[in-house]
Length: 130
Image 1: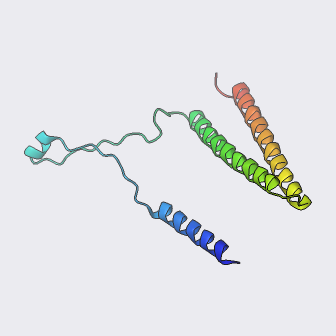
Image 2: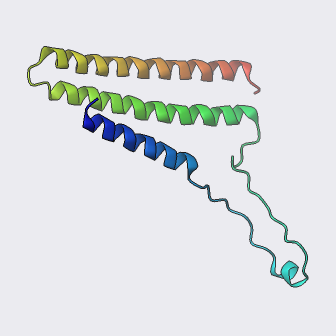
Image 3: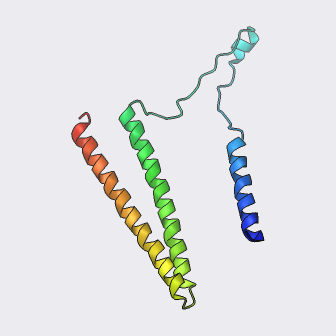
């Protein structure tokens, strides 16, 4: 492993650890001034982190929508990486083939993911509550 790979790997590990152990800021209600003056314990209200999500199908739909967003970002990254490899091949047939294969498999993955999304939506529309 050369020095550049070691540096990139260590930066990735440190970034992951930073995000893992980064403190999460919560939003709590400020204490009521009248309660503080009366020396009573303040009440704290917590907001629903899921918003207006009250049913399991809506929650599953939000999870699927989030996963589709992540999938789109990953597929776009693979497409750009494959295109970059293809464009910078310099006539090397192996790099051209590698870039073309990366773009092909990214496109196949997008088609597979979108078709599975359509099938799940159709199935939930038929079986789910109307």
